Length: 449
Image (tube, rainbow, N blue to C red):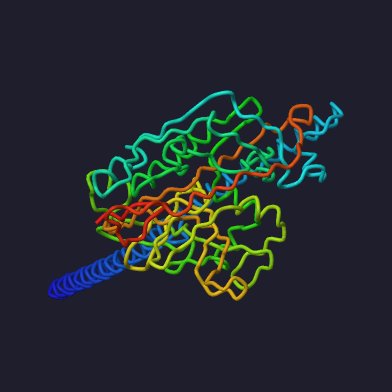
């Protein structure tokens, strides 16, 4: 009996021991599992943070998805334009084959027509356009500073006997491109002896391109698929300037073409006109300028086609006198291209383009005077500063470009004899009763204070 009792006690103790060991084992396993779970959670969070950082960089970085998408969009647009040009060229070739009549485009490609040749494209019998002062900024000029009394500016077909010359093939459409032999004169030349088109500051930057195109548009006839004011791209195509060459010839200081910029608490032309509200001014620098010559040289674009140079730069004097006051002495002309250049960490400058012959007074042995000339193109002529303290009023000529329909042949338009174009010689303007030493346009006004 005693043995049986002792056996039961031992068995009971053994079970208790086993139970305790099992409990300890379960508790230890639970603690270990909880520890592993916590570590896994921390590791997971770290991995997610790393992935999030990588994702943000991939999406928003300089080479991120958004920038890549923008670049893809730009290349797509370029491809579409090229394809349209190729289609137009194919259409021309088919027409030549079917009709046995060469198109003007094919004649140009075959050398039967040359850059600079005159074509008998005729202006419409009538037509005019009036650029309103609230668009050009001339209303503000006459309110803000001492003005010229210029408000609305009208251009009429009747007052402009234009002749048209071949500039080349338009890359976007494949059509033959013509440029007027000389720019358009304002109707004011009849009364004020002043042919220029004046624009001022932020208004010029915002509305100038449209106004230039509207003025050029009065010369559209049945043979034109497009007519507009000449642009920086037209000039670049003609003289062979491509995107990859711009940095090599750009004579502007400050930030280089293509660089990104951000300026806080300043103005864009739009924000200035919209209640003068300060904003963040940012983007990529696309303003540049370059000089051209038949001989070329370091930083100079070499253009061997003297006919092309004479056509684009003839009679475009833009001299500087001893006080560095600028005025137009010839027919230098606007480019309907809006651009911006930037002085690092200081300000951005907005404006439209300009073609001109820059005349510096330097000593010339032959003429016994100080004189130096440089044929130049600016993708931007300074008009408005992002700091809001400078705006310029400037007057230059308007020069239209026509893109002919691509299926035109010599039955429609023909080459004609060369014409001696009229020389613009309007000279230095009459001095104001109280002249200002501040640099101005032609003849121009002082900048906004």
